[in-house]
Length: 441
Image 1 (cartoon, rainbow, N blue to C red):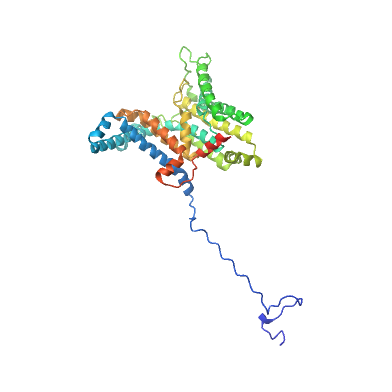
Image 2: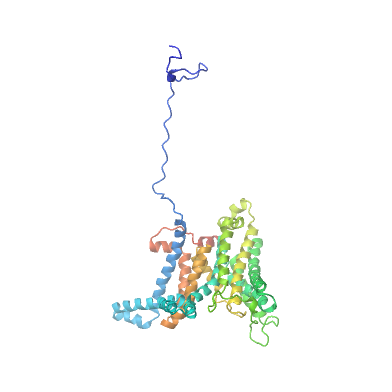
């Protein structure tokens, strides 16, 4: 049969005699089975990572409140005696006292719903402003905590434990205060930014010192920053006694009052909340961009996670350590600047009730993320602002807030304990593992 009469599938292709013919087809290999994703790996949701990171700090705070409830009960001797005679009545009274204490704390920090209703019903703008005063005080208390929390969180990301936020805050207050009262005649749009800038520079210089010592000599930043805190305390005491810094006609250590052009104005007239709070939010946005959108921030995080691998990749470890501590110090210095330019209007001893140390708790509770720091700082601001009204309404001492803060630090620093208590599985990404890594260096 000729090739023209053969069907197409039976024709032999032209070529060498040794090549296989289409008439004797080669058996095809069986197709590989498609690999199915494991059934135990559910699709990852965009919010799951954030939710997991915030779950442990949130449960730590709730646990701290529960332990705080026990402190409230134990602080009442009459209630303790009631537990031995009438446990049912003691339980009811205990619950009532705890709810009353925490209710007074929230009302003192966020305001009374009844006050808001009455204020808006009256239509009086002054009464409406007064109704928002508790919220204003809470945000005012949160402002320096945002700065110091960001300072500690930035150090955590680079594997450093910046425990010197208090000293850096003092140096920022010293320089910002001096620019604020010593320069006269400048317009506010030059004088105020200049004073804020010098506050940031003062904190950055105080953070630069431990960064340099860490990079050049290996001196541990925790020891150096703790010692520099005490140096800053005594430096402020000495400076406030100098004639070029002390208020004329005064024998006590206090500076002159800030010039009006260097004072942070209130956001709303009639409330104490000033524009430093907005500056703190801007700082949080900047730190977020720096860490997650810039090359320098990538180096910070790489050095914090694995210094050896970062060095092998060509990163300058010494430069990263110095820059991290300098920027962290500048953030804490802004806390001091906003305090003297926006709240006290003077520089005096004890200008900070411990904002630098509270920043550690804020950073831990916020998971070392800028957004978490802002939220946890506001939460701590609520505790601070509501403590005094709580004491006035219920007689519960203000020290209860300190106890809650200490418990929050303890539980956040031990995420495994929280997971065991609540039987949950959450990755330990609260920032504490970075602190532990810093101690190894």
